[in-house]
Length: 349
Image (cartoon, rainbow, N blue to C red; front, side, top):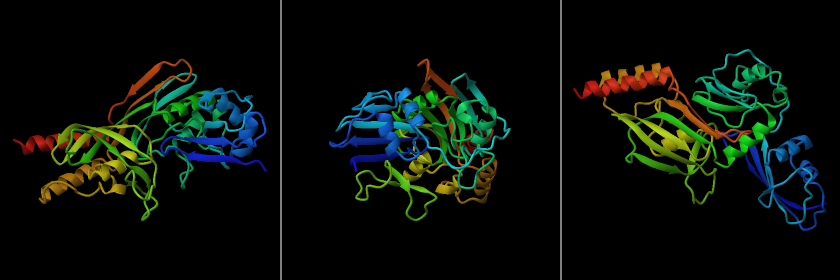
């Protein structure tokens, strides 16, 4: 049996693709790279491998190669693949979509809070993917075989904001590579408890599932003896201090699951009304009953974490044009920000 070194770097949380690295062993025979990879990668059909090669997503010794490339001993192979197929078929559902931009290759949509992006963990209907399967039902990419057709990144159910959706496999592979290589731009607005001591800052620390509760994530500091989690970097900027809360902007350098929510909790400034990470408690302010009632009223207005994917930038997968999109903060989050602005104004009178 031929030996080879194989490393699955896994899926970057929040970005829907897989990245693999392989080092060809000295005794490997010379064969086509698409055949070699098909035999060694689980759930990777030859057509899927060839599509990745067509998109420039297969590199040998850091140089893009075609599917017909003949591998040689000691070649170092890197490949980015769209997420693998799953066992069941997506059911198209006629669900309205807020489309910001669309052409033959991609679409940018504004996802409302409360909508799950893709099926899983008991959510097999009513998701964004179900809506896309209906809207794009005539496109080959949305033929029902892929659990995440068109997706190259995602946001949490209760986070609102912008997502780019690929309409072709070439666009999907190209956009996936951009997100992996950090060529995309993602800016979020969040309302957090308190005010960070520095107006601008960078939060680093590996993010992984908590040992105590596998449903939530936590930070494992870089360089820790455990070496757990995946590297994550969030840059933040305080836009407006509002007394006991602050409106901040976050720029993602990486895209881990719950990254902003976990990183802000890590520096003791959880997102406002984030029930998963403790932000649904009154963490700053007075003990007066009137203040407690004010906060509870804010929680009712915004029954979710105060997080919005506001700005999205990437290069068009076909034309190469730089594309930037911006969205308005949704009404629920804007209403709570306005209440805090009024609270501070009245307190200072």
